[in-house]
Length: 123
Image (cartoon, rainbow, N blue to C red):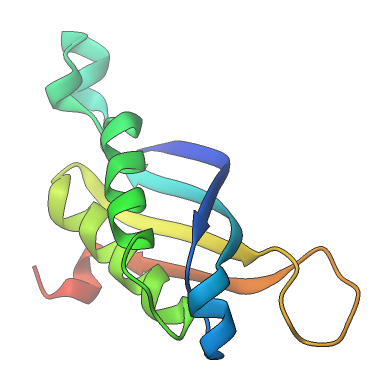
């Protein structure tokens, strides 16, 4: 097993419970770690034998473009999409941080971290 990761992916999206959050939007920081079997890729040097981080970013962008009230929902969609696309992926851990959340406090951000395993999907 190996870990394939993407750190500090910064995207603008329209997630939130408040109508203003859905209208105005905000920046989000996303970190992704994918536990994967890369044995074949280490021997073949073939992108098809591993998890393409470019494709992971495309999946994440697609899910971030769909507005949701809860980051928990967005994170679950992203993790399921990654596991569904890459048979080499055994588990996905990711966190999403909303920068400048409207909660009346001064902080770098607030968010959610999830970990989903292939076995959690029932496959």
